[in-house]
Image 1 (cartoon, rainbow over the protein chains, first blue to last red):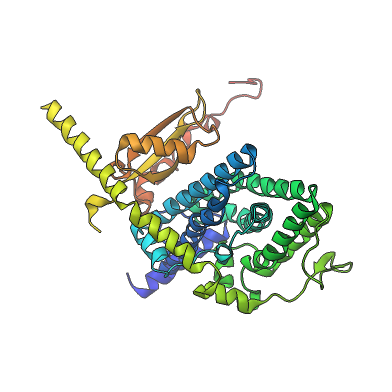
Image 2 (tube, one colour):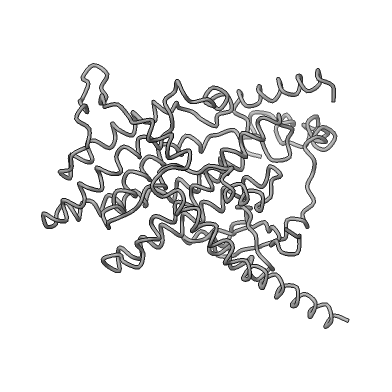
Length: 318
Length: 96
């Protein structure tokens, strides 16, 4: 194809997206569109998969059967969400093995929030309430993104995710209504998860390198700073309602803006974690790669068994 | 990694309730058709979204190519006589 033809196709392509038409896997698309989508969707899928680890940590120690079934179901949902997203990613011609390889080698990123440890039961409350809360804010606009398979996966994800946040908040309510020690656990979890949750919505607009192009492709509908403000405005009253204090001395309602002003985010910490120096980066990758490698014989055995069954069937047919 | 090791890709179709058609809802990897069905149940019907599942190995699907959409679908565009509104009837005939 000549350069002019490509230019022409690109113009038509941008016009389709501007008209809110969806792009489907076999449609022509600019290489950059394909690459950006593989990057974002796989990063999203990896986050779901790694996101199972901090919560899996508490399944066997959940304080009641009610909490245990809920946590199990949530972690299972996360596996499912990872699978929807990997499948959507594969429609762009990248294989599952390549995607795993990118995660395991550290080439692909996942959400920085999962590199923090879950040290008490209250962390299950804080993660559901804050981390899933922030994720929902990020994900709802993606239900209308331009790439069909991604948008469809996100519709399913968002439908399932709201229980995640509610079960987390319920854990916090229970703890804040409990003994002074339990209330202290809840406050401590909020103290540790608040700032990482704000960071999770991504670098400030001024530093976000992909925002402009992603907005055009509807891969992003609101800027990181707008999403963060929305998250804060929504979460502060929820904390007040259950008697918890947001760990930010500068947090103040701004009557004029009808929004909360908030303190400085420690972006050095954010970039440290992104670069692999968070408290749990090594541990998470070790668990993930370990699960993949130790599961290899199971995958191979399943394949061998499938082949044997197939051969047996063929023999019977003769 | 050799091809032999990798589980093939399957497309999943789910009937949400009797009376409705099976609809494509996504794909997954599985070693064989039995495992594909089991995985489809776990991945796509965790909240009673279905009463029946079809799985078909993705490589067995033949798909039209959007690049040929012109010759494939445009011939139908100028055949308005296939639609009821093409035919003129007197106003007195209220329903037909």
